[in-house]
Amino acid sequence: MVLKAIVAYGENRVIGKDNDLIWHLPDDLKHFKRHTAGKTIIMGRKTWDSLGGRPLPKRRHIVISRQADFKAEGCESVQSLEAALALVSGEAEAFIVGGAQIYELALPYLDILEITVVHAAFEGHAYFPDWDKEPFELTTSVHH
Image (cartoon, rainbow, N blue to C red; front, top):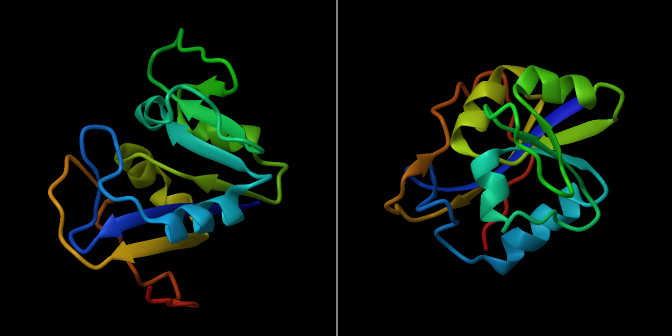
């Protein structure tokens, strides 16, 4: 199974503020949809909440929550990243889609990072973790 993370962040690695995205980038939303449609997406509970508690169409949703009794319609819930990875072990690929804590937990397991860099520094409350670029290779770079 190939584990990917997909994220958009500012030059300072900010990814969100007040449990929401800071920017509206239609091209990046299309990029997200193109890559994740028909796939499993793994996220933390706060990211799930930011979706309005509704699943995105045409995707399997796995939500990681420390709350043992967390349940929501349209998603599977687990209490750890390892439990989420066990659920997708037979799939060709799965995506980590946030938030900050889940990205940090997933870094050692990732095969591919799909990153959109927004070329500005924003204020926010959630940041993509500092990461070791050594094991990764830049394969594509597109400027909008």
